[in-house]
Length: 216
Image 1 (cartoon, rainbow, N blue to C red):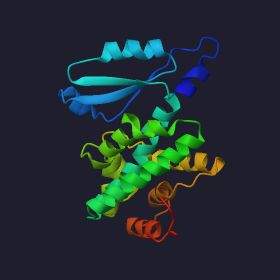
Image 2 (cartoon, helix red, strand yellow):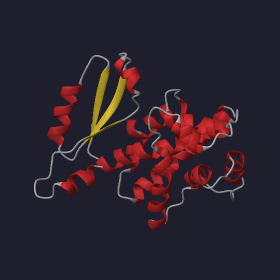
Image 3 (cartoon, rainbow, N blue to C red):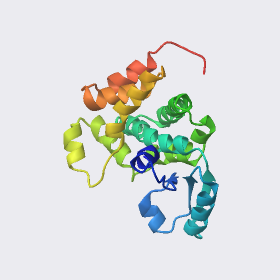
Image 4 (cartoon, rainbow, N blue to C red):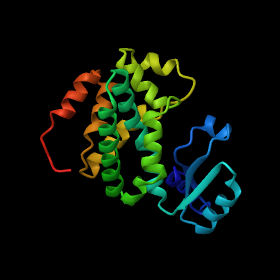
């Protein structure tokens, strides 16, 4: 979105910063200690926002990898849908741990191919938000996966939600970017197949597990 904003004002580029990280709004509002990241190419703006947003229970870290922070915030939603399907099927902690770890690997590969720094994906906007979104009961994307595993249709699930599950529309866009950059995203590809090609979650998991053996 930072690129969209900049392109909309080419003659007077705005000062742009991106706020992301593991932060369910409800918990922030209740005063739960929370850490997030503000990313900007303008170091002075990032420092200014750190001061403005600072609170006893809200801590901001700065980062100049705007692209990495934005990509992480988009990609983790798709992995969270996969996490929800695993949980909806009653699979255990082993499965979820593997999914989060390999999901992060996919996120890092694509981010690096698009010019972001891989280490950004290990920070709050990447791993932090991924863990939250895959595990938290407030996660809309996780909810979609849970309900899909129960056999409900995507249309029915989305129609009954008060908010937006961003990962539903993001999976296809990520796969298009991956194809343009020769990056393999097996988990995200299976999520897209579950969402829009009628594939069953169990078949998707089996296909992932049956992939050829490889080095980590």
